[in-house]
Each structure stands twice: as structure tokens, then as C-alpha cells.
Length: 200
Image 1: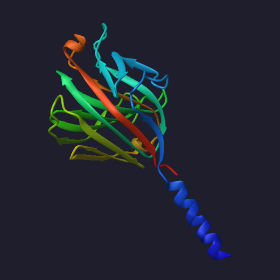
Image 2: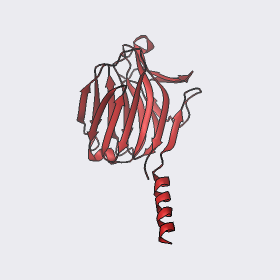
Image 3: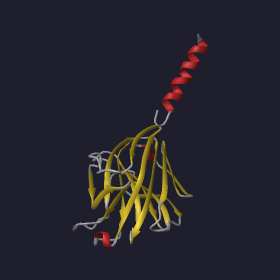
Image 4: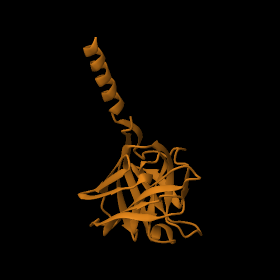
């Protein structure tokens, strides 16, 4: 009886720990309504999500998506077109909480920013990196408790902070596309987005 119970508990624990894909977007059709808010102009076509700054507001393009997640893995490819300065992936809590953490990927470095509380910004880590413009780069972000590890091509950056362990409710893709002159300045492109939850 004890052996059967032990095997059952082991099986249940293994099942609970199995990664579960909670979002996969191939960007082959118009963006779904789960991409619920954004700045700039965004489109999805032929497997690529493309964004660039537009309009009177001086802010880089960003597109937000619903995402209830604690521990998990986020993967996608990105590239910087024209004068685009960086791509970023930002994770938010509730509307009242605001930003939680942010991965910034420039042609020269990677940065992890934390937001311990609303309106507070703190750089947790920065490492040099060489990311060629106009080329695709693969990013893999792993959340595990209060730790974040990101791998961009063969560059790795790690950080830890209590706020990283908070539940992420939304995330955004965006960055600096080169300035307010729209596509003439540059654009950000993303593809092969896949998010897996590893929470029990």
C-alpha cells in the first residue's frame, strides 16, 4: 500500500512540474484581441510581427499581451531594422502595480531592469553583447522564483530580485525603432513567440 501511495505521489509531482505551453503565436494572421493595447503601428504578416513609432507621441513602439505567469520560459526571435536602437520585453503586474521587470537588448549590451514598486526603476544587471542589426537573434528568458536568466544568441545575463517572483499579468514587445519618422527611420520585428509555464 505504501509503495502504491509513493508511486502515485511521485507521478502527481512529475505531472505538476511538466511545462505547459500557454501562448504560441506564429504571426501568420492579424493580431488577436489578446494583443490588447499598444503604441506605434503594429502588423503581423508572413510569420513576422512588425512595429514602428508613429503619431505625435514621442515613445517607441510597444504592443501588450495578456499573460498570467509566475515561473516560465519565454522564447522568440527579434531583429532591429534601420536605425532601431533596441528591442525590449517588459513584464507587468496589475494596472495599479505597473512594470515588474524588463529585458533590454541593444546592439552593444543586454540589461535587466527591475521595478521594485510602481514608479521605481533599478538596473539589476548589464553585460556587453554584439547583436548585428538587420539580423535575427534568438532570446530565451527563464523565470524561476526571484531569478531571471536571459540568453540572447550566446550571450547570457542573470539577475535576482524579490519583484521578479511576482505574478506577471501582461507582457509587452517593443523598444526603440529609430524615431518619430516611422518606417523611414526603422522598425522592430519579432517572430516565433512561444511561452511555457513551469509553475506547479
